Image (cartoon, rainbow, N blue to C red; front, top):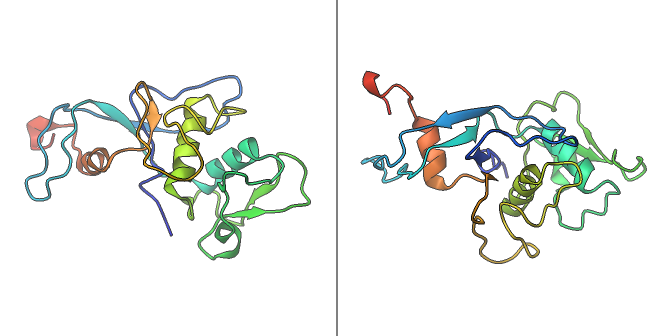
Length: 184
């Protein structure tokens, strides 16, 4: 299953950086806070201005995440799905015999393609890791407080890197920053 929009992260400020940061993302500003919903669909009303990832999270970015948060390949939180390595649409291979921090590698010509076979919880863990500065950052707290892969999870107050809501994603997909030219 491909979750392309789910891994497009939204942020209310510029990309977090730290000494251990290894992933960079391009962000796009989405303005016009307090806009009305699209009358045809009822989607897209968002109270605040925000930023959203310009591109989907790639296999390369996700492999970097996997090697940082699961250097020994234990996959305790299930962030790696074996379909990533066995399915034609997967882009990341797990190799048990590789060294610590190098268990997850890119399949040929798949590094810049969007990552597939991620669950909402995987995406939330990626968002937490991004919010916590990457590297050895936590996957269980940050934008979301996770307790396994169950329950209804909501965005924590103060989250600055998080998964977009359906309305945020819809608005960003159709947003035109030139309201005087018919957009907005």
